[in-house]
Image (spheres, rainbow, N blue to C red):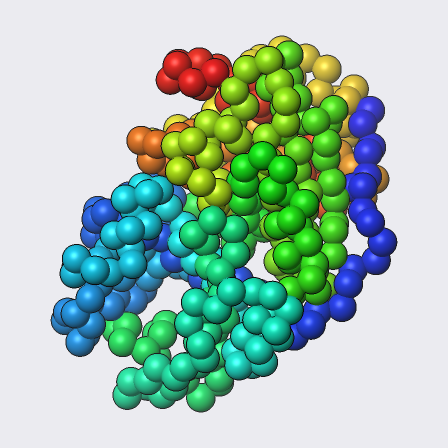
Length: 376
Protein backbone atom coordinates (compact mmCIF):
# COMPACT_ATOMS: atom_id res chain seq x y z
CA UNK A 1 0.00 0.00 0.00
CA UNK A 2 1.23 3.53 -0.81
CA UNK A 3 2.12 5.67 2.22
CA UNK A 4 4.35 8.26 0.58
CA UNK A 5 4.66 11.47 2.57
CA UNK A 6 4.88 14.94 1.06
CA UNK A 7 8.45 15.79 0.10
CA UNK A 8 8.60 18.84 2.33
CA UNK A 9 11.60 21.14 2.48
CA UNK A 10 11.96 21.99 6.16
CA UNK A 11 9.53 23.50 8.65
CA UNK A 12 6.92 26.04 7.61
CA UNK A 13 8.40 29.50 7.22
CA UNK A 14 7.17 32.41 9.32
CA UNK A 15 4.57 34.57 7.56
CA UNK A 16 5.87 38.06 6.90
CA UNK A 17 2.43 39.50 7.70
CA UNK A 18 -0.82 38.10 9.09
CA UNK A 19 -2.98 36.24 6.54
CA UNK A 20 -6.38 35.14 7.81
CA UNK A 21 -7.22 33.03 4.76
CA UNK A 22 -8.69 33.29 1.28
CA UNK A 23 -11.14 36.21 1.20
CA UNK A 24 -12.61 35.58 -2.26
CA UNK A 25 -11.82 34.53 -5.82
CA UNK A 26 -12.82 37.00 -8.51
CA UNK A 27 -13.59 35.77 -12.02
CA UNK A 28 -13.68 38.06 -15.04
CA UNK A 29 -16.49 36.69 -17.25
CA UNK A 30 -18.37 37.71 -20.36
CA UNK A 31 -21.81 37.46 -18.75
CA UNK A 32 -21.80 37.50 -14.95
CA UNK A 33 -25.58 37.07 -14.68
CA UNK A 34 -25.47 33.81 -16.64
CA UNK A 35 -22.27 32.63 -14.92
CA UNK A 36 -23.90 33.24 -11.53
CA UNK A 37 -26.87 31.15 -12.61
CA UNK A 38 -24.51 28.31 -13.61
CA UNK A 39 -22.55 28.25 -10.34
CA UNK A 40 -25.78 28.42 -8.34
CA UNK A 41 -27.58 25.66 -10.25
CA UNK A 42 -24.61 23.36 -10.92
CA UNK A 43 -22.38 23.86 -7.85
CA UNK A 44 -24.89 24.96 -5.23
CA UNK A 45 -23.54 28.45 -4.52
CA UNK A 46 -25.85 31.04 -2.96
CA UNK A 47 -26.09 34.57 -4.35
CA UNK A 48 -25.72 36.87 -1.34
CA UNK A 49 -24.53 40.24 -2.67
CA UNK A 50 -24.53 42.29 -5.87
CA UNK A 51 -22.71 45.37 -7.19
CA UNK A 52 -23.62 47.30 -10.34
CA UNK A 53 -25.48 50.35 -11.67
CA UNK A 54 -28.29 49.76 -9.18
CA UNK A 55 -25.79 50.16 -6.32
CA UNK A 56 -23.97 53.15 -7.80
CA UNK A 57 -21.24 51.27 -9.70
CA UNK A 58 -21.19 52.23 -13.38
CA UNK A 59 -18.13 50.31 -14.65
CA UNK A 60 -19.07 46.66 -13.98
CA UNK A 61 -21.59 44.23 -12.53
CA UNK A 62 -20.41 41.79 -9.87
CA UNK A 63 -22.30 38.89 -8.29
CA UNK A 64 -20.96 37.54 -4.98
CA UNK A 65 -21.71 33.85 -4.39
CA UNK A 66 -21.08 31.85 -1.23
CA UNK A 67 -20.97 28.25 -0.04
CA UNK A 68 -19.39 27.43 3.31
CA UNK A 69 -16.38 29.73 3.55
CA UNK A 70 -15.89 29.87 -0.24
CA UNK A 71 -16.76 33.20 -1.90
CA UNK A 72 -16.74 33.61 -5.68
CA UNK A 73 -17.13 37.06 -7.27
CA UNK A 74 -18.23 37.04 -10.92
CA UNK A 75 -17.53 40.35 -12.68
CA UNK A 76 -18.54 41.57 -16.14
CA UNK A 77 -17.37 44.98 -17.49
CA UNK A 78 -19.91 47.57 -18.63
CA UNK A 79 -17.43 50.00 -20.23
CA UNK A 80 -15.00 49.51 -23.10
CA UNK A 81 -11.81 50.39 -21.23
CA UNK A 82 -12.40 48.17 -18.19
CA UNK A 83 -9.40 45.94 -17.39
CA UNK A 84 -11.62 42.85 -17.62
CA UNK A 85 -11.95 43.32 -21.38
CA UNK A 86 -8.21 42.93 -21.95
CA UNK A 87 -8.11 39.96 -19.58
CA UNK A 88 -10.94 38.13 -21.36
CA UNK A 89 -9.58 38.98 -24.82
CA UNK A 90 -6.34 37.21 -23.87
CA UNK A 91 -7.59 34.43 -21.61
CA UNK A 92 -11.33 34.01 -21.91
CA UNK A 93 -13.36 33.72 -18.70
CA UNK A 94 -11.17 32.90 -15.72
CA UNK A 95 -9.84 33.72 -12.27
CA UNK A 96 -8.28 37.15 -12.13
CA UNK A 97 -7.90 37.73 -8.37
CA UNK A 98 -6.99 35.38 -5.52
CA UNK A 99 -7.86 37.81 -2.73
CA UNK A 100 -6.45 37.31 0.77
CA UNK A 101 -8.00 38.43 4.04
CA UNK A 102 -5.23 40.20 5.94
CA UNK A 103 -4.94 42.02 9.24
CA UNK A 104 -3.25 45.09 7.70
CA UNK A 105 -3.52 45.72 3.94
CA UNK A 106 -1.03 48.60 4.03
CA UNK A 107 1.57 46.46 5.79
CA UNK A 108 0.99 43.54 3.39
CA UNK A 109 1.39 45.85 0.38
CA UNK A 110 4.51 47.53 1.77
CA UNK A 111 6.27 44.28 2.64
CA UNK A 112 5.47 42.50 -0.63
CA UNK A 113 6.39 45.44 -2.88
CA UNK A 114 9.60 46.09 -0.95
CA UNK A 115 10.49 42.45 -1.54
CA UNK A 116 9.93 42.61 -5.29
CA UNK A 117 6.20 42.35 -6.02
CA UNK A 118 4.79 44.60 -8.75
CA UNK A 119 2.19 47.05 -7.45
CA UNK A 120 -1.21 46.99 -9.20
CA UNK A 121 -3.21 49.18 -6.79
CA UNK A 122 -1.75 51.05 -3.82
CA UNK A 123 -3.55 50.86 -0.47
CA UNK A 124 -6.86 52.71 -0.64
CA UNK A 125 -10.08 52.88 1.33
CA UNK A 126 -13.51 52.17 -0.15
CA UNK A 127 -16.60 52.97 1.85
CA UNK A 128 -20.37 53.10 1.87
CA UNK A 129 -23.05 53.48 4.52
CA UNK A 130 -21.91 50.24 6.16
CA UNK A 131 -18.36 51.44 6.85
CA UNK A 132 -14.87 51.26 5.38
CA UNK A 133 -12.64 48.53 3.93
CA UNK A 134 -8.99 48.95 2.93
CA UNK A 135 -7.68 47.21 -0.21
CA UNK A 136 -4.32 46.90 -2.00
CA UNK A 137 -3.31 44.73 -4.97
CA UNK A 138 -0.09 43.17 -6.32
CA UNK A 139 0.65 41.08 -9.41
CA UNK A 140 1.69 37.43 -9.47
CA UNK A 141 2.04 34.91 -12.38
CA UNK A 142 0.54 35.90 -15.74
CA UNK A 143 -2.30 38.40 -15.35
CA UNK A 144 -3.33 36.98 -11.97
CA UNK A 145 -3.31 39.31 -8.97
CA UNK A 146 -3.62 39.15 -5.18
CA UNK A 147 -5.79 41.74 -3.47
CA UNK A 148 -5.19 42.26 0.24
CA UNK A 149 -8.52 42.85 1.99
CA UNK A 150 -8.52 44.51 5.40
CA UNK A 151 -12.06 44.36 6.68
CA UNK A 152 -12.45 45.35 10.31
CA UNK A 153 -15.11 44.06 12.65
CA UNK A 154 -16.90 47.42 12.45
CA UNK A 155 -17.79 46.97 8.75
CA UNK A 156 -21.44 45.86 8.64
CA UNK A 157 -22.08 45.37 4.91
CA UNK A 158 -22.94 42.01 3.34
CA UNK A 159 -19.59 41.75 1.52
CA UNK A 160 -17.60 44.83 0.43
CA UNK A 161 -18.58 48.49 -0.02
CA UNK A 162 -20.95 49.15 -2.93
CA UNK A 163 -22.34 45.63 -2.70
CA UNK A 164 -25.94 45.23 -1.58
CA UNK A 165 -27.46 42.10 -0.10
CA UNK A 166 -29.43 39.86 -2.42
CA UNK A 167 -31.93 37.08 -1.71
CA UNK A 168 -30.95 33.89 -3.50
CA UNK A 169 -34.62 32.81 -3.50
CA UNK A 170 -33.65 29.22 -2.83
CA UNK A 171 -31.87 28.73 -6.16
CA UNK A 172 -28.45 27.77 -4.79
CA UNK A 173 -28.79 24.51 -2.86
CA UNK A 174 -25.54 23.66 -1.07
CA UNK A 175 -23.76 20.47 -2.11
CA UNK A 176 -21.53 20.55 0.97
CA UNK A 177 -18.51 22.54 -0.22
CA UNK A 178 -16.70 23.99 2.81
CA UNK A 179 -13.58 25.99 1.96
CA UNK A 180 -10.81 26.50 -0.60
CA UNK A 181 -8.23 23.74 -0.07
CA UNK A 182 -5.77 25.05 -2.67
CA UNK A 183 -5.55 27.07 -5.89
CA UNK A 184 -3.35 25.75 -8.71
CA UNK A 185 -1.42 27.97 -11.11
CA UNK A 186 0.01 26.86 -14.45
CA UNK A 187 3.12 28.58 -15.81
CA UNK A 188 5.15 28.02 -18.96
CA UNK A 189 8.45 26.23 -19.56
CA UNK A 190 11.10 26.79 -16.84
CA UNK A 191 8.96 29.33 -14.96
CA UNK A 192 8.00 27.19 -11.95
CA UNK A 193 11.09 27.78 -9.83
CA UNK A 194 10.95 31.55 -10.34
CA UNK A 195 7.28 31.57 -9.32
CA UNK A 196 8.01 29.44 -6.25
CA UNK A 197 10.85 31.78 -5.28
CA UNK A 198 8.46 34.74 -5.69
CA UNK A 199 6.12 33.30 -3.06
CA UNK A 200 9.00 32.36 -0.77
CA UNK A 201 10.75 35.71 -0.99
CA UNK A 202 7.77 38.06 -1.27
CA UNK A 203 5.31 36.34 1.10
CA UNK A 204 7.59 34.21 3.26
CA UNK A 205 5.82 31.03 2.15
CA UNK A 206 7.62 27.69 2.40
CA UNK A 207 8.07 24.92 -0.16
CA UNK A 208 5.54 22.37 1.09
CA UNK A 209 5.94 19.55 -1.44
CA UNK A 210 7.53 19.00 -4.86
CA UNK A 211 6.82 16.51 -7.66
CA UNK A 212 9.09 15.99 -10.65
CA UNK A 213 8.37 14.51 -14.07
CA UNK A 214 9.00 10.98 -12.71
CA UNK A 215 6.10 11.47 -10.27
CA UNK A 216 3.72 13.13 -12.75
CA UNK A 217 3.97 11.39 -16.09
CA UNK A 218 2.31 8.95 -18.42
CA UNK A 219 3.54 7.16 -21.51
CA UNK A 220 3.16 10.41 -23.45
CA UNK A 221 3.23 13.52 -21.26
CA UNK A 222 4.77 14.90 -18.07
CA UNK A 223 4.84 17.95 -15.83
CA UNK A 224 6.58 19.27 -12.73
CA UNK A 225 4.86 20.79 -9.70
CA UNK A 226 5.84 22.51 -6.46
CA UNK A 227 3.41 23.47 -3.70
CA UNK A 228 4.03 26.60 -1.62
CA UNK A 229 2.11 27.30 1.58
CA UNK A 230 1.86 29.91 4.28
CA UNK A 231 2.68 29.26 7.93
CA UNK A 232 -0.65 27.74 9.00
CA UNK A 233 -1.17 26.17 5.56
CA UNK A 234 -4.55 27.81 5.09
CA UNK A 235 -3.09 29.14 1.83
CA UNK A 236 -1.63 26.51 -0.52
CA UNK A 237 -0.59 27.20 -4.12
CA UNK A 238 0.62 24.31 -6.30
CA UNK A 239 2.58 25.73 -9.25
CA UNK A 240 2.82 23.54 -12.40
CA UNK A 241 5.08 23.73 -15.45
CA UNK A 242 5.44 21.45 -18.49
CA UNK A 243 8.12 18.76 -18.68
CA UNK A 244 9.50 17.00 -21.74
CA UNK A 245 7.27 14.24 -23.11
CA UNK A 246 6.41 12.52 -26.36
CA UNK A 247 3.29 14.68 -26.83
CA UNK A 248 1.80 17.98 -25.70
CA UNK A 249 1.12 17.97 -21.96
CA UNK A 250 -2.00 19.34 -20.26
CA UNK A 251 0.08 22.29 -19.01
CA UNK A 252 1.22 23.14 -22.55
CA UNK A 253 -2.38 22.91 -23.74
CA UNK A 254 -3.52 25.18 -20.91
CA UNK A 255 -0.83 27.82 -21.52
CA UNK A 256 -1.57 27.77 -25.26
CA UNK A 257 -5.33 28.26 -24.87
CA UNK A 258 -5.00 30.64 -21.93
CA UNK A 259 -2.42 32.66 -23.85
CA UNK A 260 -0.02 32.51 -20.89
CA UNK A 261 0.09 31.51 -17.21
CA UNK A 262 -3.02 31.55 -15.04
CA UNK A 263 -5.19 29.71 -12.51
CA UNK A 264 -5.77 26.15 -13.68
CA UNK A 265 -8.08 24.86 -10.99
CA UNK A 266 -9.63 25.53 -7.60
CA UNK A 267 -9.75 22.67 -5.09
CA UNK A 268 -12.85 22.87 -2.87
CA UNK A 269 -13.03 20.82 0.31
CA UNK A 270 -16.05 18.81 1.41
CA UNK A 271 -16.62 16.72 4.52
CA UNK A 272 -18.58 14.11 2.53
CA UNK A 273 -17.29 13.71 -1.02
CA UNK A 274 -19.75 10.93 -1.85
CA UNK A 275 -22.78 13.12 -1.11
CA UNK A 276 -21.16 16.15 -2.77
CA UNK A 277 -20.21 14.38 -6.00
CA UNK A 278 -23.57 12.61 -6.18
CA UNK A 279 -25.34 15.98 -5.89
CA UNK A 280 -23.05 17.61 -8.46
CA UNK A 281 -23.62 14.78 -10.93
CA UNK A 282 -27.37 15.13 -10.36
CA UNK A 283 -26.94 18.87 -11.13
CA UNK A 284 -25.32 18.02 -14.46
CA UNK A 285 -21.64 18.66 -13.63
CA UNK A 286 -19.29 16.71 -15.93
CA UNK A 287 -16.31 14.97 -14.33
CA UNK A 288 -13.25 13.28 -15.78
CA UNK A 289 -13.70 9.54 -16.25
CA UNK A 290 -11.90 6.93 -14.15
CA UNK A 291 -11.62 3.39 -15.59
CA UNK A 292 -13.14 0.55 -13.55
CA UNK A 293 -9.73 -1.15 -13.45
CA UNK A 294 -8.55 1.66 -11.11
CA UNK A 295 -10.70 0.15 -8.33
CA UNK A 296 -9.61 -3.49 -8.78
CA UNK A 297 -6.68 -3.22 -6.34
CA UNK A 298 -7.69 -0.01 -4.57
CA UNK A 299 -7.73 -1.50 -1.07
CA UNK A 300 -4.35 -3.15 -1.63
CA UNK A 301 -2.90 0.19 -2.72
CA UNK A 302 -4.42 2.53 -0.10
CA UNK A 303 -5.36 0.19 2.75
CA UNK A 304 -8.55 0.32 4.79
CA UNK A 305 -10.90 3.22 4.15
CA UNK A 306 -14.30 4.07 5.59
CA UNK A 307 -16.01 4.49 2.23
CA UNK A 308 -17.61 1.71 0.21
CA UNK A 309 -15.40 0.97 -2.82
CA UNK A 310 -18.36 0.14 -5.03
CA UNK A 311 -19.90 3.50 -4.24
CA UNK A 312 -16.60 5.20 -5.09
CA UNK A 313 -16.47 3.23 -8.33
CA UNK A 314 -19.98 4.29 -9.31
CA UNK A 315 -19.09 7.96 -8.76
CA UNK A 316 -15.53 7.60 -10.21
CA UNK A 317 -13.91 9.08 -7.05
CA UNK A 318 -10.12 8.71 -6.64
CA UNK A 319 -8.34 7.76 -3.39
CA UNK A 320 -4.74 8.17 -2.21
CA UNK A 321 -2.85 7.81 1.07
CA UNK A 322 0.17 9.40 2.73
CA UNK A 323 1.75 8.82 6.15
CA UNK A 324 -0.92 10.92 7.89
CA UNK A 325 -4.06 9.43 6.42
CA UNK A 326 -5.89 9.29 3.13
CA UNK A 327 -7.75 11.65 0.82
CA UNK A 328 -10.45 11.41 -1.84
CA UNK A 329 -10.68 13.61 -4.92
CA UNK A 330 -12.37 14.09 -8.27
CA UNK A 331 -11.91 16.66 -11.04
CA UNK A 332 -14.50 18.27 -13.29
CA UNK A 333 -13.99 18.67 -16.99
CA UNK A 334 -13.08 22.25 -18.05
CA UNK A 335 -15.83 24.71 -17.19
CA UNK A 336 -15.22 26.87 -20.26
CA UNK A 337 -15.04 26.12 -23.98
CA UNK A 338 -11.30 26.74 -23.73
CA UNK A 339 -9.67 23.74 -21.96
CA UNK A 340 -8.48 25.87 -19.07
CA UNK A 341 -10.26 26.32 -15.72
CA UNK A 342 -11.76 23.38 -13.80
CA UNK A 343 -12.77 22.47 -10.23
CA UNK A 344 -11.40 19.76 -7.93
CA UNK A 345 -13.58 18.28 -5.19
CA UNK A 346 -11.46 17.00 -2.29
CA UNK A 347 -12.02 15.38 1.09
CA UNK A 348 -9.11 14.89 3.47
CA UNK A 349 -9.14 12.17 6.07
CA UNK A 350 -5.84 13.16 7.64
CA UNK A 351 -3.76 13.22 4.44
CA UNK A 352 -1.84 16.40 3.61
CA UNK A 353 -0.71 15.28 0.14
CA UNK A 354 -2.18 16.05 -3.28
CA UNK A 355 -2.97 12.64 -4.71
CA UNK A 356 0.44 11.56 -6.02
CA UNK A 357 -0.78 7.98 -6.34
CA UNK A 358 -3.60 9.18 -8.61
CA UNK A 359 -1.47 11.20 -10.99
CA UNK A 360 -1.12 8.50 -13.65
CA UNK A 361 -4.85 7.64 -13.74
CA UNK A 362 -5.79 11.32 -13.66
CA UNK A 363 -3.48 12.41 -16.44
CA UNK A 364 -4.39 9.48 -18.65
CA UNK A 365 -8.00 10.65 -18.30
CA UNK A 366 -6.96 14.20 -19.20
CA UNK A 367 -5.03 12.87 -22.21
CA UNK A 368 -8.18 11.14 -23.45
CA UNK A 369 -9.97 14.49 -23.32
CA UNK A 370 -7.03 16.20 -25.06
CA UNK A 371 -7.19 13.58 -27.78
CA UNK A 372 -10.88 14.29 -28.38
CA UNK A 373 -9.99 17.99 -28.76
CA UNK A 374 -7.14 17.15 -31.13
CA UNK A 375 -4.59 18.74 -28.80
CA UNK A 376 -2.52 15.77 -27.61
